[in-house]
Image (cartoon, rainbow, N blue to C red; front, top):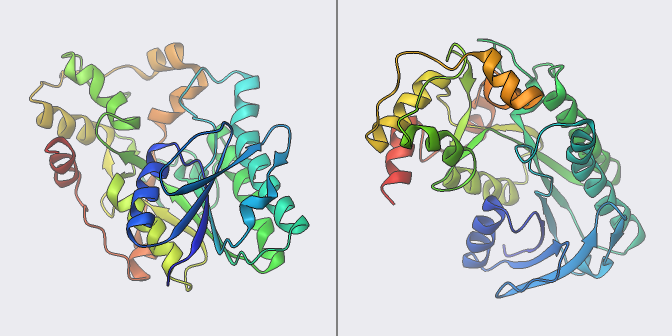
Length: 302
């Protein structure tokens, strides 16, 4: 059944892919943006998360909200100010949406929110399910506050789905481009001991999970959004190098050096997060890309 969907974070990689897919399926789309922009066949409304201002007309006729908005966690060093911005962008944006819904007559029934596997912190080889306890570093604290804000919508009877995203792989964008850059320059090497688990997902499967959550009313709560076979950093590095026809050095980049260069943000590449995809699989979702070699071959073959 076609729906009217309000989308936040629409200008990011996932947002752009979702707009294309949703329009192709006949859905109506409105988006919230910080600045006036034009997107063909999409209604644009303005909001300012930090000023807690929103055009409540954005809710008119909306059936479902897909909430992707949030500051880029890999942009800029993690100063105390930057960490506050990262958390506030997620928590305050969620609160603003719920406030607008409380103050405006609407028909919203579904709230599908981005989340992240950073919720689990760094856990070595432990298999992590949606029932696992959260971690204790900054990424985990950010995700805990984020999900807590999203869960407030349960009080109003909304169906809440939280998509705990792994590393989304796409050509020339995001994490994959960052990982590929040193490899292209013949400087590819595992990070730290290379044994940390990296939960990854092909961008097309990521888009499909959101569409699946939108269509399937039985889905509620948190779902790990990462392929069934996570890989270590060492395996990921070698797989990217193979696609780029580049060597991988027989030594690794010391963890201490990464901490010196990146500070606390080094946890983005040093966290070991061995996530299970069993919950989303058991619901009936089928990944198109289950192995890293298969996913990278498709991305670099495009």
